[in-house]
Image 1 (cartoon, rainbow, N blue to C red):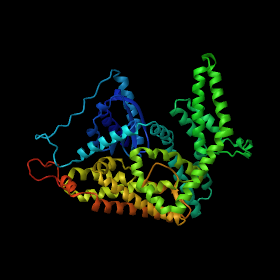
Image 2 (image 1 turned 120 degrees about the horizontal axis):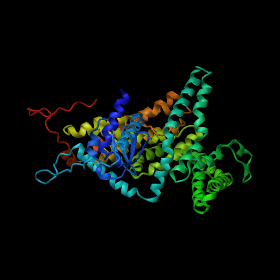
Image 3 (image 1 turned 135 degrees about the vertical axis):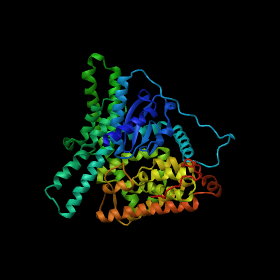
Image 4 (image 1 turned 180 degrees about the vertical axis):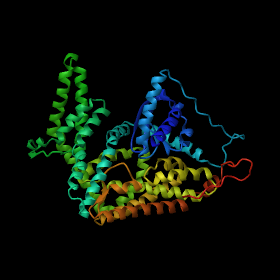
Length: 511
């Protein structure tokens, strides 16, 4: 039955994105189905948002349909299968019907009441404007770097939870014979993560993936301990994911140079040999040392920042994370998170940044109660809140707070307060973080790890979420609306739902 449901979701999405011939690529991350499109105008945005399984849509370098964690991993294969079947059955492109144009009212003016659909349209306009601003070489590079690490997130999450389970069993003294097996399962991926980073880097930047992996594998090879650089012996894993990223980027450039100058008759022998040899030597006698220094500096700085200015640092990080997401600059944090996890087993930054989502949830609940007559917007909030509690914030951001304006700012205030709470305890010596990247909100609880025990760690994170919810709610409730906004927004734009009566549909209470 579950498979039928996922296939039904995929079948409902496919015609609304222009049909199989409008699809150029299909992929997914933790929460989103990412689709490459030939013709953006064929997408029927409002119909997509109306699907029960769709939590929202985000347009960036690809068209992204938010389905939520777990669901997206099951719907994507069904979607890929439907596209493949449709192309085999009907190779001739069949354009999908154009989206129905939106017309103004009879008086030619926009109605005073604002619906969730109109807010979503405003959110789409903001996303389009952001996309145009983000098309800079630096931000495009950050997106490509993110594409390297995003496919690794499921393994990071799985191994992180297994490591947490092993730690819990150790603390309880249960199943001592099983603990070493869990440790091996959890650590195996992390010990070779550099290879996966190298493979994905070469793939993303146009090289041969296995050559990128081969060069990156040098970093984790135990024999590097016999090599002396700058008067010191290298250590296996030195440089970590940053070294693997740099090594694979170099390998791509060497390979492209070889493809250009090496005769075709010799290409199969010369190109891979030169690529691995040249990139390998530079990696051993330069990149590993430099990347190791940078990685150590990142770890030392993160620990120093929270140990000396934890509350203030948490306030700044928690308050600015939502704007960073809007600007696309949050992608630069992915390799930093991965480096911290590689060094200490967890990233201390993610629980603080997750407070931005808590502020967003609190702000959305305040909007719900401040606009009791706007049934359309309240329905949108109710449908998006469960995902928001689990750390999927796009529906609330693009469907509620960002197009409203002021509630987006007050959501950031809530995130700053939650971040300051968590940062304060880091400053007091209770350090903890997440053993994987990707989830936030309540979904982050199973991945938390720290130096002060599981109970203390969970309590502090839960306290931070509570502070974020409360401050985000209070700031939005009291400061999120001007009198004019309330007058314009607090009107029910929904028509009566029961035929033959004059009573409008009654909005159920917020669950």
